[in-house]
Every structure is written in structure tokens, then in C-alpha cells.
Image (tube, rainbow, N blue to C red; front, side):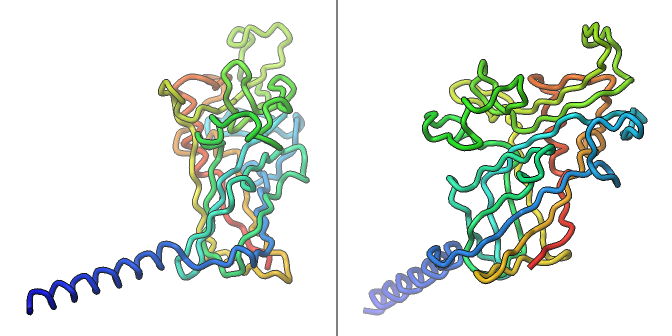
Length: 279
């Protein structure tokens, strides 16, 4: 009898523990009670605002190389938020893909719907996840529609490679020699087109990077139905060159397909800082 009672007690405690763990891991969010939240991606270059083709006052990286920027575009996807109590909410994936275009201020806001609550942490991916990258074309609509993205015209899709460009930065620098580019026009252009999600049936480079932002110091997001909450992030494009790896434009005027592209992707982590939250 004692053994039977002991077994019943153990099973009861195990069930209670399992329920407690499940409750902690799967918070009871009311997904019918959603409120607006936006994340603002404000592009800067070091301590300066982003200005395109500013030849009068170019930027200068850690290598002392002057440069100007003519284009910047990048995908933000898979947004997740964590409450002050530690509960995580994942934005529905179909509503979680955004293309931020430096030349189009209207695209700087990633607008989503989340349950009312107080959020102290934000996570997102720079790039397009492998699952979505390999879905049928009819599942890739909006900013992910390959047909609407002409690479040469400023798009974000390699038709020949059936893959997205996660991050595209272009500009000019007089440190680039014509011989390096084989460019008789003398434009001295650099191009950083970073993609690759790890491969489908053949393993490739994986340049997807997850960014996690702590909102505690500069203001948590207090999301309510009766107001718009906005998390304002600075995106420092100088960190493309001056991040975990210091990158020389002269030595690397074109970065696209080789292993060196992972160094640019690793620098993504340092691009994003939380400036403030508007509640």
C-alpha cells in the first residue's frame, strides 16, 4: 500500500510540475486582444545622419578610408517580444517580414500587432529565414515576392541563385582603384550584397543573424490599444566596417558570395541600438 501511495504522490507532483513548466513556457496571451506596436529603424553613420552621395563631406571608417553611400536596404523578419515577466510572444510569421529602404522613409517602420502588455526585450532576424526562403513562390508575397524584386534595379533577390539578399549596401570611395573593379568609368563603387541561409539540399554559408535588444535602459514598450507604442532603434551603418571585424573598402570593394561575407554578417550584431521608446 505504501508503495502505491508513494507512486501516486510522485505522479501527482510530476503532473503539477509539468503544468507549471508549460504555463511558464506558453503564456496565456489573448491573441484576439491585439494592440499596435512599431519598431523604427533609423539609419545613421557613426555620429551623423545618413545622407546619400554626400561627396562634399564623406564618411570615414576605422581604416581612414573616405566613402559615400548610394544605397542601403535590408530585410527584418521574425519579430519576438518578451514581457517584463519573462513571457515571450512571437509575431505571426506571415505578418513578420519587412524591407527597410534607406531612400524611402515610409519603410523605416516595422508595424505589427501584439497582445497588450509591457515588453522589455525585442528580437528579430536580419535576413529571411530558411523556411520561408524555400517555400513555394505563392507563399512569398509582398516584400518577399521575387517577381517584384529586380536585383539590378535595386531589388533584393538573386534570380540565378533563388535566394534573397539580406543586406545591401552600396557606395563610392576614392581608395578603390579602377584595376580592382575593371571599371573604365572611374566610379570607384563598392557593393556589399549579403545573403545565403545555409542551403536547402546542399550546405552553404549561413548569414542569417538574430538580434536581441534589451529595452530596459531606454524605455520598455507599454503596448495598449488606445495608443501607438514605438521602439526607436538607431542603425549605425558605420558598424558594417567598424564592428567585430574591421573591414577595408580598398581591400574588399565587392563582398557577395565568398566566406568573407560572414564577417559582414557578424558585424550586423553591432548595428542596432535602442535610443528610446515612445508610449
